[in-house]
Amino acid sequence: MGWMIVLAFLILDGCMVGPDYVSPPTQSSPQWLDAGNSKVQSVDGRYRDWWKVFQDPVLGRLINKAYEQNLPLQVAGVRVMESRAQLGLSIGGLYPQSQQLLGSFQYNRVSNNSYQGSFAKYFDYQQAQLGPSISWELDFWGQFRRAIESSDFSLMASIADYDNTLATLVADVGSRYVALRMTEKRLEIARSNAETERESLNLAEIRFQGGTTSERDVEQARTVLASTQATIPTLESQRRQLSNALSVLLGMPPGKIKELTEQTGQIPVAPPYVAVGVPADLLRRRPDIRNAELKAVAQSAQIGVAESYLYPAFSLTGQFGVLSTNVGTTSLSDIYNWHSRFGNVGPTLSWNFLNYGQITNQVRVQDARLQGLLIQYQQAVLTAQREVEDNLVAFLKSGERAGLLAQSTEAAQRSLNLAMLQYRQGITDFTTVLTAQQALLKQQDDLAITLGDISSNLVGVYRALGGGWQIREGKDLLPPSVKMEMAKRTNWGDLLAPTTYPVPGKPEAKNPIRPPDW
Image (cartoon, rainbow, N blue to C red; front, side, top):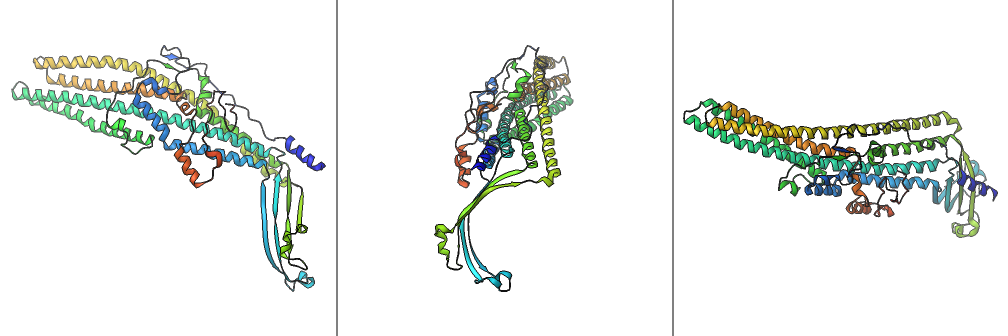
């Protein structure tokens, strides 16, 4: 009885080898480079549903559909389910690792010429056996607890990966939608200018037929018109490709988005300012940063798992059952007799002390992997800051460029109007008109591109700030149809029950698997 108390003490009070995770230092700027700009506000912005700042209902509907139907996002959700199952597998290591019900029936024939045969009265006999067998390696060094710790943080890392996939998806839908509307605007400009240039061609032909101008004016007008018309097929191709890309993001075949195929729209208008908070907020908001550190935490626990093999393993094994043969006065039916019982129980010790060098190198392998993940985490923090700075300066400078292009476009329009008037009055030649038309087309096209760049860069700012993934708060990560399909194939137990996961930064949110520390 005393040895059982000792074993219980070893189980409950066993140590855990291996290092405890320590977050590495990261470099973070106190404020953004453009914090002094009047269009940049150092307060928390609208990150959960940032697309609403554009006040475009079509964009909102597209993002909601993408969240519901996107296939890569569902793959990320399935990986979370895989991590949950892996966590259950690791937890099972704390319990008897081998739990078997053994049964056997044997017919044995002993050779007459063998040692046993020379003394045995029976040279053939039958034997039956039935009973449970248990083997339990005690978690004295924390091997299984470290494995649970690693699986636990791997699960949290898979949730962060899902959030990162969702944030990227939302930003991709926004960027492609802006690009689509920008392309439609460029198409409108090209077609409008083509109509104007066709009128100029008609005017040149009338004046040529009237003998007031040369044929060169006609050919020049036809050249400019054909050049403008040549841009239209390219823009139409781009529009179709962007629509197809959006369809795939929404988990739909190309051409199935009615909002895009039945009507056109304007380029989403970005607000004149953006709220960006401070760089330190990225550490808790960016899911890719969380994912990078959680992977490091999970790997840190793997060092303890590897290090536990340096020490002896203590196990408790036992077997109980009934056994009977047909030798002598016994028969196989005696297996149901209580006197046929047998059993054994006791502790065992195993120690791979001769493999010390090999195991030590395995610990070093795990430690090197941890160090690599720590460096990747530090790099992720720097990369996140760079992405914010890049998109922020692009947003601000594209706004400045748009203001200047708006002025140049107005001037180009006035220049064209004056050139046409003077040409009709015979004051100037037709080349001046054509030059003014080409200048206007370029300025209008550049302005449309820049207006699209403003909105696209703002989408990039919100993506870099870690916005968009928060819309999954309070919702399951997999649609019911996917869970039903999985349940038909495999018994998932309660793992497929509707489950919500906490949003980091909200302490009131509770994880049904593990209280979050992030």
